[in-house]
Image (cartoon, rainbow, N blue to C red; front, side):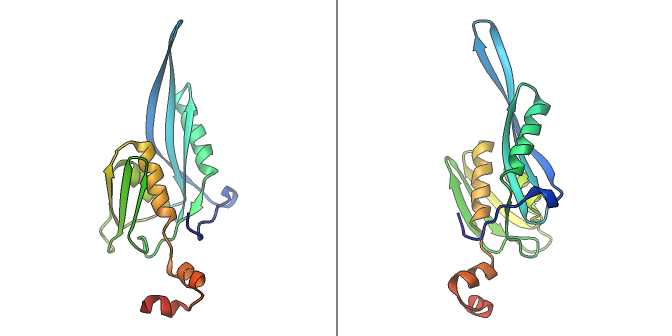
Length: 171
């Protein structure tokens, strides 16, 4: 995890939640089948703060509510530069691989499924994203979050290297 990631307190921000996936789980016992649900939820303020959570319950609404509460506990700040990310980033979690690339204004969010929910929740408006390998929503969410948490803005790079901001852009 990069050094610029800061945990965020939920008391002072308004969060919007996006449902990524719902999974019905069946447990077969001697007495019959028992159904339960798991929900993956992403919350964000659409201004650089995002988190994800997994909720499990016997009802869909309870699973979503638990997922939202879990997501609020994992909020992090993500650097955004003019509606896109500061640089290209790739990440992998289990079988899922993701690649994020900054895009010019007006491009939109070119991503699918679980990646789109996270990128919209964090407030990124222009990005090119590709998922390779597994399309499992659990792994895609975790790989996307890993890629976003590894992003660094120019101010963080300058601070870590102990140089001025102008020297970062000169190369």
